[in-house]
Amino acid sequence: MKAERFHTIVDAYGVNPARWPEAEGEAARAHAHTPEGQAVLDGARALDLALASHVAPLPDAAAFARALKAAEAAQAPAVARPRFRLPVWRMDRFRLASGAGLMAAACAGVMFGVTLTDHLTADVQADAVLYQATLNGLDDTEVLG
Amino acid sequence: MAAIADPDQELVARVARGDPDAIQALVSAKLPRMMALAGRLLGDPVEAEDVAQETLLRAWKQAPRWTPGKAKFDTWLHRVALNLCYDRLRRRREIASDAVPEQVDDSPGPDRGLMAQDVGRRVEAALMALPERQREAIVLCHYQELGNIEAAGLMGISVEALESLLSRGRRALRAALADLGPAAEGERR
Image: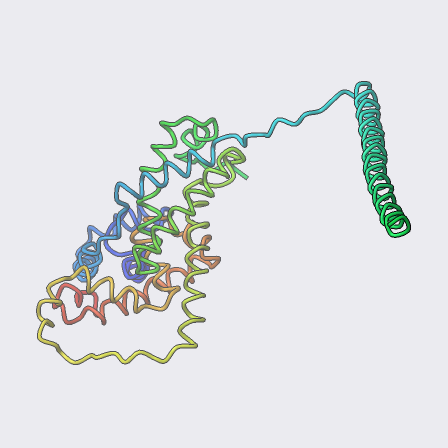
C-alpha cells in the first residue's frame, strides 16, 4: 500500500483497523507497522480518543418496557369480530319469517288503532248525546215552567 | 448475486414466529443501537428514543415478511432510522427558517474551564455543529461501526464520496476541539 493511501484511510476512518475498508485492511495493517505508518497513527489517535469520550443516550428500563409492549401489540393477531351469518338456504327462511313478523306487527297496530279510535269516538258521541239531552231539558223547563 | 450473510437472520426468523425470547433479544440489541444512532444525529435523547421505538415498531411488522439473503436486517433498521431522522431534521430546518436567529455567546464564561474538561459534551457540540452529511458519515462509520460500502449505500453515495465526507468531518472536529490540547490537534499536518 502506498503511504498516501494509508494516510487517506486513517484520515477518513481513524486509527482502529476494524473501521478500515475490508478490501484494503490487510495491506493497511501491514503498512501500520512501518515507522511512517506509526507516525500517521500517532497523529490520528488523539481525535479517536476524543470521539470515544462521547457517550450516546441509552434507553432506560421504561424505554425497554415500551418497546416490548409495542412488540407484543404488533405481534398479537388481529381479533376478528364474530359475524352472524346464516347459510343462504336458511337466509330466505329467515327473511320470510322476519317479513311475516313485521306484517303481523303492522296488522296488530292497525287493529289497535281502529279499536282505540272507535272507543274514543263512542265516548265523544255519548258526551254529545248527554249534552244534547241537557239542552233539551233546559228547553222543557223553560217551556213547562 | 451472492446472498448476504446476516448475523441477525436466525433472530429475525424467530421474531417472525413470535418467539418472546427472540423479541427480547432483538430489543436488547437494537434499541440501544438505534437510539445511539438517532441521538448522535439529532442531539436530543427524547427524539432519539421516539425514532428508536418507531424503528423497532416497523421491525415487528417487517419481520414476518423479511427475505433473508437480500440485505442485513441491521442495515435495513439503519435505513428506517435514518429516514425518520431526516424527517425530523427537515422539520427543524423549516421551523428554524421561520424563527428569529438565536444569538450565540462565544465569549468565555465563568464556567468555561469546567466545560472544557467535559470532553464528551464538547465532542457532542462539535458533532452537532458539523454539516449533516459529514455528521452522518462519522456516526455511521465511527460510532455505528458500519463498513464503508454499507455506509455509502445507506447514504446513497460512492465510497470515495463517503471518504471525502469523513475526512472533512474529522478535520472540522479537530478544529473545533483544538482547544482541548494535543488530544484533538494530533492529526493536524
